[in-house]
Length: 448
Image 1 (cartoon, rainbow, N blue to C red):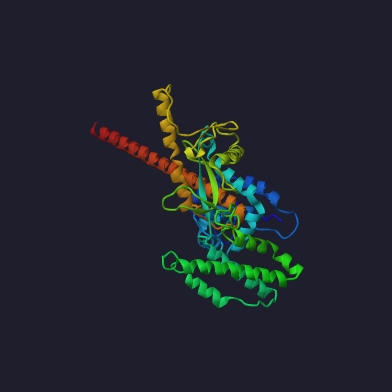
Image 2 (tube, one colour):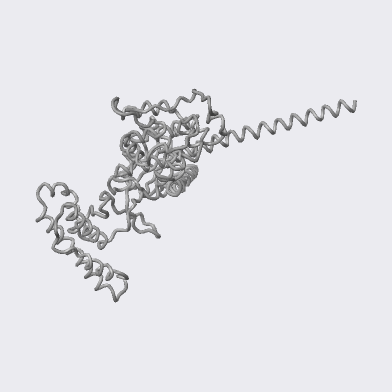
């Protein structure tokens, strides 16, 4: 059942209103006044039932998601800071200062699952619409990046060791006595893997990896014999994953790199400092002049950049209301020149009949395309895109859209603050000129 937010117009007899105690020119105060909270609540109300115990207010939950991404915080940290920060509370719709936690951190997990991709896409759409006509440019910049998962660098030895530990845990839960737990054996094999790249240790390390694989397969087969059909069905997906990891070869496709994130895939972007990245590919669309993110989506498969264009352009046209006329991309999108109504342009050598004006225009256009790279860098360092802590492929989609929405909100907050600052500066300048003119008039009258 949907919860209700406090009435901002209701005054308290015992304490002053929170709004009256805060700086109205603070960026969060300005953003709170700009946000269309009624539209957001109306749109997300369809994810709630009419029966049951009332949930937390939608504005509170949405504001916590925005604040978490805006200030690069975890679920636990944003809830803890909410109690300390009155601007966080005012942004969330509170009328008086609160002393206790608004929600349990796990409630944010349940809320993300409740609203899903459509709900988070609505938040991204609001962040775009607040910029008005600036977000409806005809030309956009498009690029892809890697959103890494929260996993360690995958190796065969790590995966085999985790399979062994999982099998021992399953046997303990189901009261099954294993012929051998291999605890001391695995410990010694892991010691043999230390400094495995040293020439003297390679042979011993390879033998240790083969032994770990043998032990993992032996435990899987033993559990297969001793578990009842009902018990086996409870762990069928896990054992299918274990078997696939043990049987996969070096050059196989669709390999498993993590037990808790099996949808992770390996991406090579040609970087010198990081040859491979393990996560999901994400596409971003940025307006050419105003620098507003009007499209952000994650891709389930590691596909060629040109094949990611239909999905991200379709999302952009859905969020903005129309498809962009021109998409400016890099050479990684070679082979694609048109996607629906959008013309795709990439850098290429000029033709013999290309005029100097056309060359200059193309040069400016592709130099501007490079402006999306620092935006991606800011998304990774400031808005939690560098490492995704949300689970599954749906977590990839939610995280990239929330990061893009936080970037747009922060851009709007800066614009609102600078606008008020310019107004104040202009007012003081004109006031000073007026005072000087009055002083000069007074001096002239005195001399007369």
